Image (cartoon, rainbow, N blue to C red; front, side, top):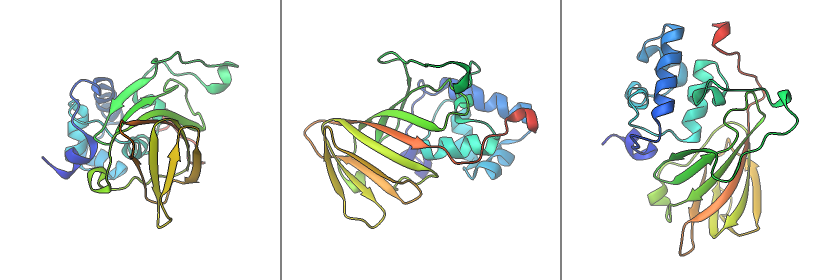
Length: 208
C-alpha cells in the first residue's frame, strides 16, 4: 500500500460520485492524468485511484483538486449546484450531507451543492487517538473554526501547545499552519468544523 493510500483511506463505494466527476471534468478539459497531476500537485497514482473509486481524499487534497480543475469544491460532487445568493435560506436535514471516510475522520460535508460559498462546514467524527496514528498533519489555505459537539479532543496547531477541548468548547486558527485533532475520550469525538475558502474565486471549466 502506498503512502497516499495510508493517508487518504481506501473506500471503494463512498467516492463513486467523486470519481465519475473528476474523470468527466478532466476529459472535458482535454487533460491526461499526468497533466491534471501537475495542475493539482497530486500524484498521478492518487488521481487514478480517485477516478476508479478506490480513494477518499482529505479536505486538503479536495481543495488542491478543485483549484487545479479551476472549479468550486462543490462541483466535485454534483452538477446540481446553486449560488448561495439564489435563495435566502439553504437547509440540510440531519444526516443529509455528503459522507466521506478517511483513516482519521468520518466527514459529513454540508451544503456541497452550494456554489462559490465562502465557508465549508463539515460535521466530523474524530477517530485517531495518537499523533503516530494521525500521520502527516493537515495543512491548507484559509482559516478554520472548530466547535466540539460530543466527546473530548486535543487540537495541535503549528508549534503551539496542544489545546484540550470538550463538548461546548471551540477554537479558531490559521489553517495554513500544520494542524491535527485527536480524540482523547473513551469514544470518538464529534466536531463541527468550518473552513474559510481562499479569497480568489474559482473560474470554472467554462473559462478553460
